[in-house]
Image 1: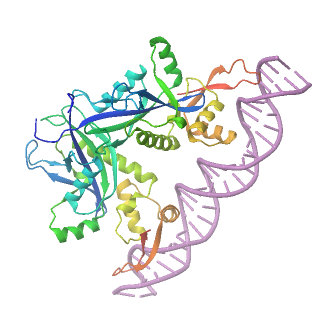
Image 2: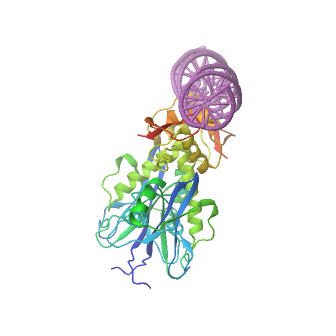
Image 3: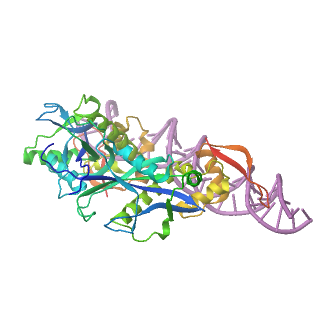
Length: 210
Length: 210
DNA sequence: GGAATAGTGTCTTTAAGACATTATCCA
DNA sequence: TGGATAATGTCTTAAAGACACTATTCC
């Protein structure tokens, strides 16, 4: 090994989901000092025999036991004393998970993952509030031009539900007719044979992403 | 220090400029093994007392003696044996420099920086061809929605020159009247009192970015 | 038939793309 | 006055935004 500076390399992940029309983020409670008992973003040390991408997927799988899609690098955090113990550089990713998938897995594995409403998250360990804020900005930006909203949606959904989800992330309102027009020209979705059930009004047709 | 895995953290930079209407990239010839005598992207080891951003700026300043704008993270490269000696993770940035600025500085400092036409770059050291390719994709993407073309332009330029520069990076042709219209509505530019000189035809008005 | 939400059509405004003529400077 | 490029206006087409009515299901 060379005589040179080595740093500890961590990957941290901001995992978003939507629960009850509200954006949530996965947090874990720290079991050891520093910041014992304080919530933080899930993360892990880069092992010598794995790539950064593998490390991120390992963290995600460890916490959810589900394959998360759209795992995206958005920033690195390398302030000198962001970890009070020694020098740690964080390579930070965000990802998205369907609440549906998570629920299924949770029943089958007794996972104790904890999602918190984005708007109500308080002080986190280390500089994780800054990481969280940067991830949210990147998420909003990516949503504005791509179709990644699909990674939030359940397998089947109505147009109204899609609109609700979009509005909850963008934090703004869309006009119903124009939204339907936009969705049909920009997203690859198709009607299914399913409709809403047990609703006291005309049931909506359910769509799916192709 | 903890008993844990430490890796060497490098920053690598793909520095773009336009010379004679053609996209160029800064390369440096390696003086030591491995890949001795082979060209590579400029880069540097992250020192213990600096942030990643500082390390990138240090590399850029070392090579150019000019302040480069739009320094942007685009990817990390962490394959296990990308450096044949030991484990090195690269955090990769791209940046842009005005050829003008560089020329001025070159005369005053005898810098020996070498830019190569992007299209003619051959085999580079390590996985730097992959880094270069990823940077170019990111550059094209960013150019398509932002006004970062301004970082390539000289202080004063004609609309035709701006069009030439855009065409050389996008690798496509634009219709002159529509291009002028687009530029005037999307970029913050203004006329200067200067015009082209010594041209055997009507001289173009020179503009500047605000 | 009434309540409730689903689903759609049209008009207006804005941006993009195709296209040709006039303007200015130099020799 | 001829050569060369600069500069600009209008028509057409596509997308975005505002807006109101009809359709379907349940009770």
